[in-house]
Amino acid sequence: MIGRSERADATAPAEVRLSEETIADPYPLYEQWRQDASVQPVRFPSGLIVWQVTGGPEARAVLTDPRFSRSLRGLQRRGILGLGYAAGASMLTSDTPKHTRLRKLISRAFTTRRIEGLRPRVLEIAGEFLDEVGRHDVVDLVSTLAVPLPAAVVSELIGIPADHRDHFGRWTSTLVSTPTNPAEEEARRQAVLDQHEYCRGLIRSREAELGTNGVAEQPDLLSALLVAHGADRLSEPELLAMINLLVVAGQETTTNLISNGMLALLTHPDQRRLLVEQPDLIGNAVEELLRFDSPVQRTGMQVALEDVPVGGTVIPAGAAVVVLLAAANRDERDHPEAGQLDVRRGAKDHLALGFGPHYCLGAQLARMEGAVVLGGLLSRFPAMRLAEPVTAIRRGPSSLFVRGVLTLPVRPAG
Ligand code: HEM
Image 1: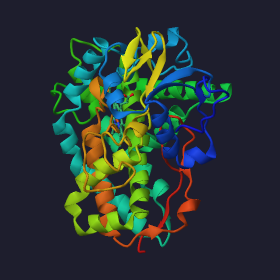
Image 2 (image 1 turned 120 degrees about the horizontal axis):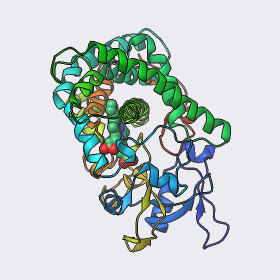
Image 3 (image 1 turned 180 degrees about the vertical axis):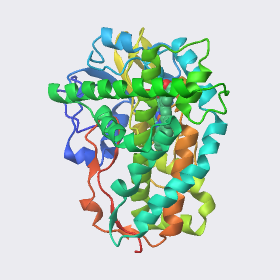
Image 4 (image 1 turned 45 degrees about the horizontal axis):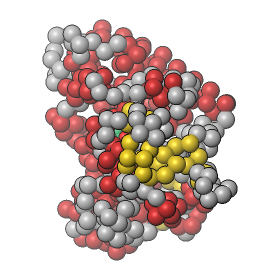
């Protein structure tokens, strides 16, 4: 989440700060930035100057241009990412050919069939959480449903035993936070180390149980991955980075889709009514909710390997670059009346799941979870309403990266 911007003088880069006001609603600021210039340098809270891309066409150009690198080592060497960023190079922080190799390997295990096979479990898990929601006059949808459900699904997918899932939830929240001081930086580093130690044990126990079954027959993604990588072995750091990425990428993102999405529907009664009357629109609605209030606000850091012209501006060699996906998703050139929520729009060309080679690997699962949960909430509780005035709903976390809702108290029966 991006904070307020101020300029000391006309030529200095705007300052990006995490402030209450823009954590509550960053979109006016995004609009202002995009109108100033869809590609411009800003100063991040750490002091780093980052070239920020806020326009849709410019975002797609950057995300498909190999002259922008994600390589963790390169970013660390240039001081763009700190050395404390100890998660290790994953798919998301690698360029081709390493990225292609890692993505190909996981794609052998993370297949459409495996995701579709999860659907009955997702329905079952969602049913249990929806029952719990229905037991209360007033209930917080975030802690009762939006946080535990994606954690349960991603744990089930990977094969993390149910009684270990709380640790994962805690590590993930620490990992997606934006550290603002050395103590928080240290907490983040420690969370990665703790998670790695736990995962080493999990890998050893899975390896001992693999048997002779093929990839498709393995009971969970971790076992499938251990079989799939076969001769083209993942090194232990690669495997740990991959599990870490899946756990982090699959949880808070989906949590925020559910809570941002439900908040948007509760504050747009006409749109909710439309969905209650026409439940078949749920697929379109999930796309629109992803676009309208994107759970992942921006991409990971990149670096320009040479001077690259984008939208009439030259991003200089060596510059740090991020794409503000949530700002690009409100670009009128791509989405007329972009500030309006319209669940019939159903545009799949939004950037909420990324674009180009790093397009979200879990997109199919994210869409399925979104449709099952939001569709389930609307059909079970068609009269649901907020239990507090909308102005009392607190947005968060305090992160440059993700945007969600801290608590969402509702009256399920209306
Ligand atoms: C609503 C939920 C989700 C949203 C909004 C989301 C969003 C994104 C975005 C924006 C990216 C690209 C980031 C960048 O370019 O820097 C991405 C990549 C990724 N996502 Fe998701 N994601 C979601 C759910 C999931 C789930 C459920 C999983 C897996 C369990 C997952 C796994 C990944 C992985 C592995 C990548 C990296 C792909 C690569 O580097 O090739 N995501 N996601």
